[in-house]
Amino acid sequence: MNRPVLDVVRGAVLPRPPIWIMRQAGRYLPEYRAVRTKAGSFLQLCYNPVLAAEVSLQPLKRFDLDAAIVFSDILVIPDALGQKVRFEEGEGPVLEAIEDGLGIGALSLEGVLAHLEPVCETINRVAERLTPAQTMIGFCGAPWTVATYMIGGRGSADQAAARRFSLTRPAEMAALRDILVEASALYLAAQVRAGAHVIQIFESWALNLDEEMFRQEVIEPTVRLISRLHQLVPNVPVIGFPRGAAGMIAEYVRATGVDMVGLDYAMPLNFARTHIAPLAGVQGNLDPLRLVVGGTAMKDRCEEIISAFEGVPHIFNLGHGIVPQTPVDHVSELVELVKGSGEGM
Ligand code: CP3
Image (cartoon, rainbow, N blue to C red):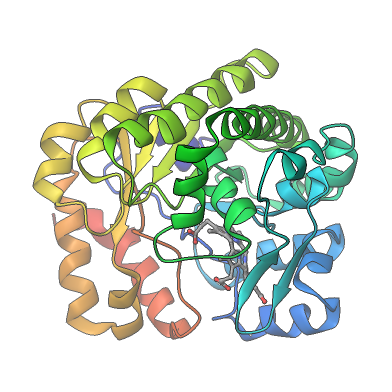
């Protein structure tokens, strides 16, 4: 039995695209909120393989999705390196911001794999419960995106703290990139050994960078991360999601050699079809708000996306993560729509 998501990442063209949804396990599901309350803190949930596996599988019980993604977070990496992370209600992640070389010197690669072992056990448990047609996706944040939280101490609209750090402390920034590349590669390799078939690298903050900084902070460490990963586990296919890469996306795809690239919802379909699809498979790219609104706002765009990528390797997904306000019924409708899209077309 083939696994459609894995096959398409490897270059197969199917009559209708397989589908999974970024952040598919999360607060829009009442059963997620129940487990989340039981677990205590968000990180306790991430590090509890029994509960994290349950939560990873929740969306697959409700919807006919083609992949599971392990329930965890991109910020378990700084946590594992020794920079404590908290998730505050209504505020998101909070870290003690790294301000200089001292903060970077305090990070340690030594305990990373032991700290992240529970996430690998979650993968193991989820992978065992998948059907032979479902794909197990492992993930990490890209070094730059993770660094923006480590340096800024929290999310920000423009990542100014990290951009300034990159310009004013190039040596410390290079040291941080090295640590993140190595920690992420070890972590991803462990995820593959635990049962992940495909890896997605979330570069959620590829926007707001000039081309020089984009090359230095996004492309260069991603190239090294993928080559180190392939040294540890040859051939595992990789999806890169450089959200907001805009005019740099083709260079990102060529330089990193990702098998598939996630398209954010601002990426025009014609542009992607002409300039990106010849370089790699494409994943995306419905605006998550169209899923919130539903009806024709969702359906019409969905059909446009599917027909734009006919004949090329395409995985249907959103152009960014699903939001908590999303009605569960709209998700069922979306999945049915995508699954039925081969009929009559
Ligand atoms: O896709 C999945 O179902 C797997 C789980 C997953 C989570 N975070 C769970 C989560 C994945 C793949 C992520 C990735 C992630 N985390 C990214 C990259 C993707 C993106 O959305 O850009 C980023 C930037 C983070 C960092 C992060 N984690 C933030 C900024 C926040 C707070 C904002 C928010 O969405 O709540 C989180 C918390 C978080 N990660 C939640 C979940 C389900 C909500 C926390 C809760 O349940 O209390």
